[in-house]
Structures are given as C-alpha cells and as structure tokens.
Length: 125
Image 1 (cartoon, rainbow, N blue to C red):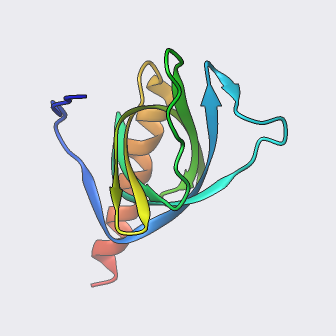
Image 2: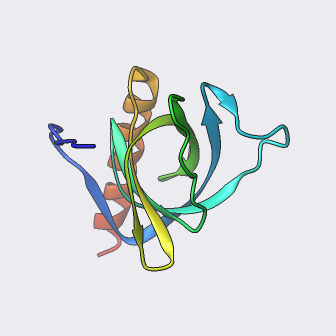
C-alpha cells in the first residue's frame, strides 16, 4: 500500500502518548467484549497518526479494518476512528499509520488540544 502525506503539519512527541484502541471490522467491534488494546502514539495530525502496539491486527481480506483510538493530548478525551493505511513490524511491536477521514469535530479537537499542550510546554521552559 502506498501513501503520501499531504498534510500541513504533524506533531511528534518526545515521549510517546499512551492510548487505547478497539479494532473495528466493517464498522463493528472485532469481538463482543470490545477488547481495548494499549498503544503509544508517536505523532499526530488533525487527519491521522502513527502509533505502536504489541497487538497485531492480522489480515482481513475484503474487509474494512479500522481502529477506534482513545487518547488525551492535553485535557479532553478524544475518540477517533482511523483507517489503517499501512502497518509494519518494528522490534517486538507493530507500527500503524492511521488516517481520520470525514471527522471534522475530531480534527478541530486535535488542533485545539495540540495548541493548549504546546502553550503549556513553552511556558514550562
């Protein structure tokens, strides 16, 4: 799968941000218990993110596989559904690239939370 980013910015974290996610297959949770897996967000933009997880999603031929990621950038819990654009093994983990498509509220929330986070980082110096 080839993918070229066309976004204006990505915010990379010095220390990865802890998050949780649920695997969605064709828009429905992969299991009835809605198992939440731990992950770490490496970078984020209003329309996507790069993350690590110890859990491999596996292959699902002819099915839409998405992740519902739940994370906090500054103060507000953000829930975003991302299409998996790419994945690759990295050490003992899996690395994923997600794109958030058609979620303008999530885009706005991410931008606002990143602004607040950055202001606090600058004021601590």
